[in-house]
Amino acid sequence: MRALKIRTFQDHLRKELKDPEFRKHFEEERRALSLAMRIVALRQKHGWTQKDFAKAMGTSQQVVSRIESGDYEGFTLKTLERIAQATGTRLNIDFLPAA
Image 1 (cartoon, rainbow, N blue to C red):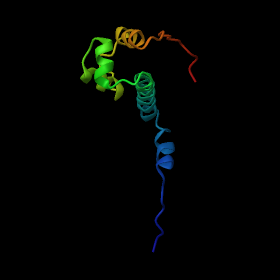
Image 2 (image 1 turned 180 degrees about the vertical axis):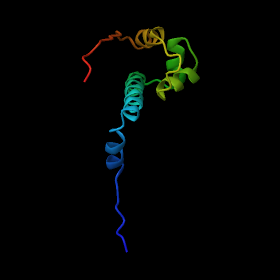
Image 3 (image 1 turned 135 degrees about the vertical axis):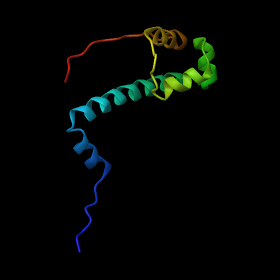
């Protein structure tokens, strides 16, 4: 009888990341999720619900929900500027060396 090899998610992910196509898509999603989490933190810092945040941005709660889920289809620089303005922050975009 063969012993079952138990693999963790991390083991599986390490293997998958060796595939350049998988790595490319994984990194895109990781960046989107990271930005979404930063936006959620800004909203929560103000004690706002998504509806409150939407009102401050001049948009709908559904748009805020999509932004916070990392769904950036059609996401624009103007949207980021509206988030910054609504939260009293300054938008700073930078280009960093590729790893």
